[in-house]
Length: 112
Length: 112
Image 1: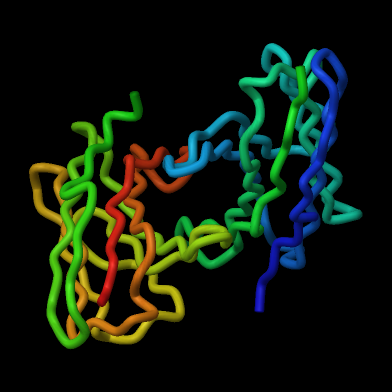
Image 2: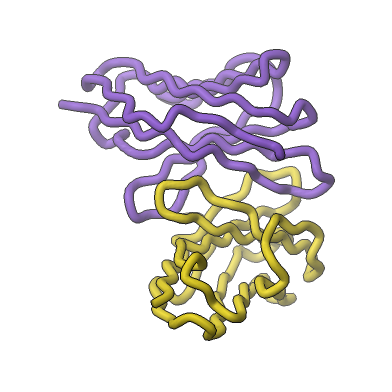
């Protein structure tokens, strides 16, 4: 069973702080990794994709990938109350077709 | 806007009935995947279609079936509905299997 693990939270941070979200995965053959944001009652929204080891920055978001440790993280700088949502880590497992395996998500709460 | 639209937004059915959910992707998005998201869980992969052929399937029984049409629309059909089929059903599309998937707003299915 190819798994993706996330801490369910909630992760509470004050406005302006850095939020750090973590994810581990079991399939060593995985090549692409994604972070989706999901507001309550809404569908997942893609915020970051990362394919190679290291950091990838996009605005206030930084994704970090360490394939040797099978670890993906998302940093949100200058957190805003509007960032309060569930963040889903998704891994495209090595099946020959595009199959995303999701974690259960980490709920982030940013307090004003 | 992801360019992926789903209908209907909400649906109520009873056990044993059949349901068809619909998805319309952007022109040129040859890959469409369907996911089931139960409350408090991450989305679970049902199956994927590429150029109108099913090319991957998750751990869902045969009563879950689908179609993809040349006009970039697709359907998810579920027969013999069970109470556990109550969930948010998500359609996701991408131009090809190496591009990130973007989700529609989902159809919330309730089984009574």
